[in-house]
Structures are given as C-alpha cells and as structure tokens.
Length: 304
Image (spheres, rainbow, N blue to C red):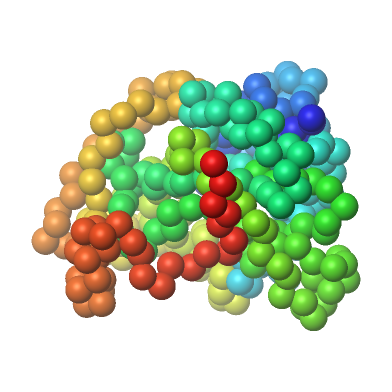
C-alpha cells in the first residue's frame, strides 16, 4: 500500500496560504509527495525545498493565463500532480488546507479497511471553514461541508472536476479535455473524524480584500485592480452570513502561524449579509440536520 500526496501552489506567501503547513500535515503518512509549483516570485519553491524531505518531488510549471477564466488553471495544475504520482492511493490537499495529526492514523485505518473492497473509489472528508481569525468558523449553508480528498490511483482515469472542486472518472483523457464526457462520480466512504481545516479566509480586512481581487482574476476576463486605499469601503469581513466560535485544537503544524497572527475578528452581526432564502431555510436545516439542495460531486456509500 503506497500513499501519494499531491498539491499545487503558486506564490503561496503572497496569497497568505499555509502551504508549508499543508504539506507537513500529511507528509508523515505519504510515501511520496508531489508539489506542483507554478512560476512563483515570492520564495515558494525555495521554502518547499527547505523542508528537506526525500519524499517531496517538485514539478515546475508556468501558469497559462489563457486558462484562468472559470478557474480552469486550478484543475490543470491538479491534473499535473495527479499524472506524476505513483502510489496506490492519491491524497490531494490544497494549499489552504491542513490535516490534524490525530486524523492521520484514522485515515490509514480506513485505507487498510477498504484496500480490497473495489466498490470504494475513495474517501470523503468533512470541512471546517475559518473566517477572519483562528477562533471563528463560517457555518452557514453557503459553504461546502464535504469534499473528496483521497482516492484510488488505479487504471481508472481520474481527473480534476471543474476548478479542482473534486474528481470524476472518465473513459479517456481526450474525452475529459474536449468536454465530450461529464465523467462518473466517485463512490466514496466518509471519514467523519478526519476533518479538513480550511484556512483560506483567515485574513485581516486588507489581506481579505487583496485575496478577493486576486482570486477574481482567475474567474473573470478582466484583471481586477486592487485599490488598497479603499479596502474598508469595498469589503467588510462582517458581511459574512454566519460564523460561530471555535474552541477546539488546531493541527500542531499551525502553532507558530497562529501565535504570530494578531488580527482579532469580532463579528458585527448587524452587517451580516444573508439571502432571504437562507433566512427561511437555515433554521430548518439546523433543526433536522439536513441540507436541502446540497451539491454532491460524489456517491456516498453506506459502509461500516
């Protein structure tokens, strides 16, 4: 049983994502780790090299900005990583995601349990989404609850779906690339104890505004202009629909990063922007524990 981890990143420091901690968090259970590093100018590649691990292999890429619309570049970079792994299992972790060390033995146990059960294509992981700082999480129906992060690397042709949102199985790479096939959803088992810590929105107001503008560059044809003088006028962290406090432990690899983060987010609920539909549905979902109309890019198997 060989586990291959893989990720993609470009200018990780400029984007303020914990890409180093992300790699470190799953490296202990990986036999190899493929880091697809775009043409960075902020020392991202050098920082990954400085981890000095013989498990890590860097694949250098130059991002094709013609693929930026709709986030296609993210899927392309994910597929480059996928094409370079050699393990029986593929563990995809994005640069803003970190796994808790307590989850690692649980993940390995699940792989061993279903190693010979070919009805299982992969595993589904629950997410928690931090907002503003490390003490608050966004917990509304507008954030995804689960994603596939671990799957078999077998003869089936698995490709990144949409903007690296998830994965699907295709009959050929050609049918995937020319768009003639929508792909088959992976059949997965959920690992409820293996929570993905999603830190992409841990930013002060200035950093959040810069991130939003840079990210929009990969989903629109017009280049976003960042006006740092008007940060507060253009974006308010308080406009988040709903957050709650988080009092549990973070992954150990995040210790220094958390200690050196000094912005404290205090949600002004009077500024929260909540759609009328969500105001009606959210309380019902909270009560019954079910999300209406939830998008699921997977087939969840009921296994024990």
